[in-house]
Image (cartoon, rainbow, N blue to C red; front, side):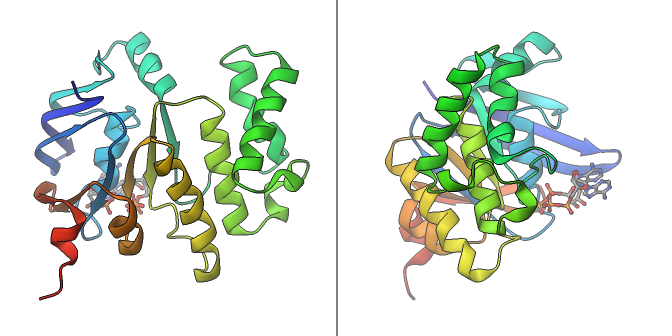
Amino acid sequence: SPIIEIAHVDKWYGDFHALKDVSLSVAEGERIVIAGPSGSGKSTLIRCINRLEAHDKGRIAVDGIELTEDLKRIDEVRREVGMVFQQFNLFPHMTVLENCTLAPIWVRKQPQEEAEATAMRFLERVRIPEQALKYPGQLSGGQQQRVAIARALCMNPKIMLFDEPTSALDPEMIKEVLDVMVGLANDGMTMICVTHEMGFAREVADRVVFMDQGEIVEEAPPAEFFTSP
Ligand code: ADP
Ligand code: ADP
C-alpha cells in the first residue's frame, strides 16, 4: 500500500480554489517531482501532507495515518515527514549544531550527547561537519540549505518534502544541494520535491506530476516529459 495517499482533495483559501480534486499515491521509496507554473498549487499540496495547511475535502493518509483534525495524528504524521523550504528557515541565533539538535532534544527527548552525535553524522553526510559551531549567517546559502536538510534528517523521517529547495540559491550553489538530494534518493528515501530543476527531475524522479491552476494535469515518468520532439 502507498506510503502517501491523497484522494480527491480540495482546498480553498477563502473563495480561492487552490486544490481541485487532487489525487496522488506515492509508494515507499518513490521520488516525485512536482512541476508547474507559479501559483498552480504545488506548495499548497505538499504543505497539506504534513498539515502546514489543512485540506477541506477528500482524504490524505501518511503511512496509514489519516490526517484529520486530531492533533495526535498530526503529530504522528509530522514525526515521519521532514520538510525543507526555499528560505532555509534556520534559527539565526543558534549554531548549526544547535539548529540540528533542538527538536531531537526538546521534542524527542533525546539525550544531548546522542542528539549531537546524530547531528554530526548528518552534517558529515551533507559535507559540512566543519561548520557545526558556526551561525547560519556565517554560511553560504548552499551551506545553509544543506544544514536544513541535515536538520530534517536528524528527526529520522520516512518521507522528505522539498519546496523549491534551490530557488533562493546562486547558480554555483545549486549543484551542491542537488548532489545531497541525489544521495538521499539513492539511499531509497521517499521524496516529493517541488522544483524547477528539470535536470534533477530527469536524473532522479520516478514520476513528474505537472500542476496547473490547482489541478494535476499530467503525470508521467520523466522520460515522457523530456523526449525531444
Ligand atoms: P505554487 O507553489 O504552485 O506557486 P501555491 O500553492 O503557493 O502555488 O499557491 C497557489 C495559489 O494559492 C496562489 O494563487 C497563491 O496566491 C494562493 N495562496 C497560497 N497561500 C495562500 C494563503 N495563505 N492565503 C490565500 N491564498 C493563498
Ligand atoms: P511559494 O510560491 O514559494 O509558496 P508564496 O510567495 O506564494 O511562496 O507564498 C509565501 C507565503 O505567503 C506562504 O506561506 C503562502 O501560504 C502565503 N501566501 C501566498 N499567497 C497568499 C495570498 N494571496 N494571501 C495570503 N497569503 C498568501
